[in-house]
Length: 232
Ligand SMILES: Nc1ncnc2c1ncn2[C@@H]1O[C@H](COP(=O)(O)OP(=O)(O)OP(=O)(O)O)[C@@H](O)[C@H]1O
Ligand SMILES: [Mg+2]
Image: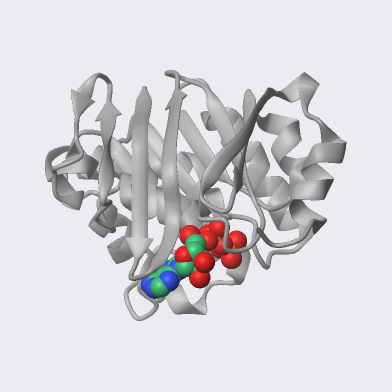
């Protein structure tokens, strides 16, 4: 379970998050929607400790993790699949995956086997440099690397960005399989994809959560206005 209380982040004079509170219950998949610049990536980066908030607290399974460095958060089961994938192109696929297991090196070999079961295409390319993979395969690698840390809560920042619909479909099929066993917090721009999978949909507007809906009750009109409306 992931809980956030009153998170505030500023970049100099720009207030990117203005008091965000939310709770993702165990085993649920929540989707965070919001237009460009709403603060979605800032929220995810703050959760994993890569940005220091000005205020607010973060809890993972009841334990406060707000003051912990990023690697300690990974060790406790919180992992981010970052925007733009951030794989190491000159390292092999296998080396990239092994890096994902830095927080739990003991079980890494068996974990690798398990993760490769989920991503058979990576199994065939283990010794390729990661930079030689297609965009879709690189996204799979980023996901697989995150799973190597044996997370309890996985955050994903726009995993379908720039990918062909067929590949996006594959990624969503994998997320559907992972759902339940993992708590997932997914940032997505594609509303239809998000709605296909989400237990709950949150809307972030100019650094504030402005709506939280069950999948069945999403207000598409309001959502459309949030995407197309004037900048606040
Ligand atoms: N390193 C930074 N320095 C200064 N301002 C930043 C920095 N990173 C983000 N911002 C600003 O903070 C706000 C939130 O940015 P953020 O990247 O979190 O938005 P986002 O919702 O992830 O957008 P996108 O959909 O484009 O990925 C924006 O106004 C952005 O310009
Ligand atoms: Mg972003």
